[in-house]
Image (cartoon, rainbow, N blue to C red; front, side, top):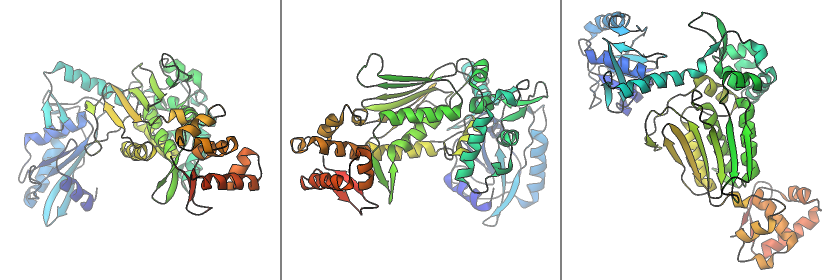
Length: 478
């Protein structure tokens, strides 16, 4: 933490993971309530010397700082007060000539009590949930789920993992970042550096974790420790009672991601769009975010089968979840929190995901570019993402629907377009960035012939070229 970072926290005001305490001369009991509730929830920042409602920096009495630090450290290490005890290190900052005490409280791996009471954190502050059996049960369940992926298997050695998958992941990381820390690590060292080898607290023995098995395990290893694990990919456009295509995926998360991406690419048209001055595949951007979400943020203690479904007017995903709230998530109010941190870390290293919270922003951005719609994120026991489409599934290009695609996009001029020109249109719908040589190669014809067809389509005002021959793209006039 730096002084500038602390200023930003103060300016943002109190929220579910930020709490201000005036505490000019001593510590009040509500400081410890916040420590307990933050640790039982998602962790958070406590700042002493700031007025909660106004964000005014009044500071802590300089002569009392040492006593406050000593009293705080003594109290949180006292099992009779906070159980289990904690080991936190407060930091002292000077901002605008005032002394502030900053305390970072991490998310705990187990439930903690303050003076025998259980405290939890909500957007409204710290609440005593001791006498609410349902809330206490959910807190225990959330703790179990959050760290379920950290379950250690001391009897399972590296031979239960697919080392080739680890090596592929290593190459993916190295291709993204020069001088990546994994460059000089062997397979075991990579696992250790990402928290995938831990010590079992019950036996004191070291072993690979469930997260390591999910990421890199052989298929029979995964099934032996998590028999309910699978992801169901469904394409349902014509046969609405069942499906037109389906793939049940039961393999490691690295290959599951690739297979789900391939399934999505197989059934969804790829329309390139401009993101700033760069041409990008909005389809691939959306798939990346929603697929990484159902794999990295799933509650693996739940037997619910994750789903990735493509329909004529939407894509949606469903996965088991222990919610930190209920209802539709709003982009401007969303508070991200980590789920399965070891899996998320590996996904970030190999380029399957970005920083925490970016997935929702990116999905929203690229859905607007792809279909003009707004995605919906529903937080509940089953987490859902719904991507509205404009019959994108019907626009998938293939040998059996070239004419259908052309008619859908160019209804007013179809009668003017020849069968050969329809082949060109189908390819441009697949990728508006195709160059003349690429089109000729795809259709196995000469460049001269493709030039004639493109010229004809332009004269009929069916297509037009936007930008240069090398960096531009083809626009189809609907």
